[in-house]
Image (tube, rainbow, N blue to C red):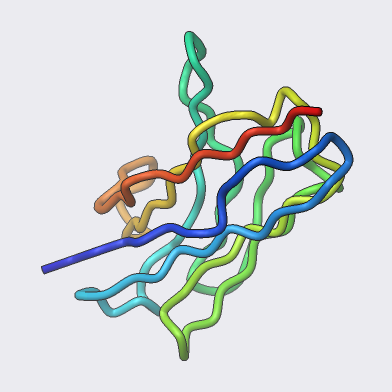
Length: 119
């Protein structure tokens, strides 16, 4: 049984930081691209960032320079370090695991973790 379990969400003030974690089980973690989507109320789901099996990263323009994705294959875990948080970063954040091919398909999802940026 495949599981992706996110943690690390919460309430933070603008300008603060959070680190999200997503622990995977039931898959050969090193063979999957990993990433994070987010969805805010009444907004479309947005791809925030991803990291390939080779460690290549991509970021949405809205988070470039503020967010950093990383992976630890030994721990089967992907991380999202979020700095300089803004109220518009408020959303439920979902991690996913995807085989590198075919592209733009997402095989497994976590349950989501709420991030709220507010003073």
